[in-house]
Amino acid sequence: QVISTTGLLGLLGTLPSPAGASVDYKTNIFIDNDGQGTLYVSNTNSFKIQKVTALGVVSDVAGSGANALQDGFGTVASLLRPGPIVYVAGSTPSTSNLYFIDQFCVRSVSLFNAQVSTLAGDCNNAGYRDGHALDARFGISVGNLAYDDVGLLYI
Image 1 (cartoon, rainbow, N blue to C red):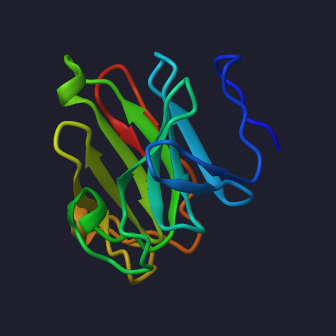
Image 2: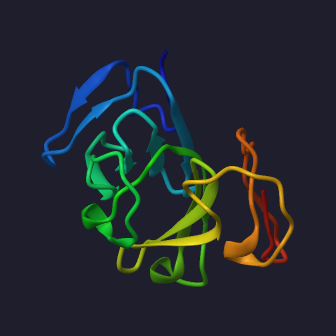
């Protein structure tokens, strides 16, 4: 499996990075990009969100690598089963965010300070219930995410 968005980047299997982060991109990865050559990878197997530059430098954005649930900053936060991911550009780079499915919930990562927050659903409990933010419940297979020009996030 080869991933290429810029012509400079191809990933297959485990890739060491000069930034010190290692990656295992064999299975269960989800990718979005910022339109400027940077990829954001949600890796279910490593319980991390990682950034891959056009030069192939990999760094951890969020997730301690432990299969757990904890909001927090960057690698202090823990992720359960990070899945589909979407990059949403802000008016400035510091107001850009990543949104991703994490098991049965939707979480975000601020690209300004790497704050990981749970936005909707209950990460530990599947269900089917409409409601506001954390009162909503999502089924076993939460599908994908999309973001529109009006500013709405679709789950």
